[in-house]
Length: 128
Image (cartoon, rainbow, N blue to C red; front, side, top):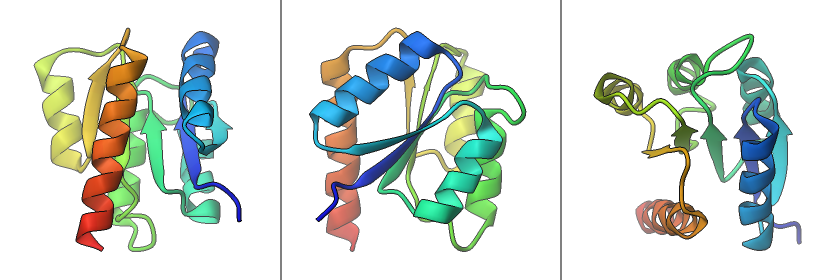
């Protein structure tokens, strides 16, 4: 049995590496994307356990990915965690209003990140 798939969309190599390491170490199969369009295409193809999105990415930003995913019947139930350097209240509020499940500001603690992932998965399994 394959481990659960997770999509990480981030165009910053250091952030991508850290997120991949955290999630791989926790037993997830990580599928990387370097822009929002790739992330949206992967979401449709794979139906991952959840998605990690940066806000500022080329081609399509993370907020637009959330907007489109939540408007798509096939994708709307896939939880999204925003992990970004954008820390303005307006960015956080917009992401949550669009349907993001959580929002974490870079730099972040890997321990806190994995705790938020665990909480998200627990809530998702409880609701199922």
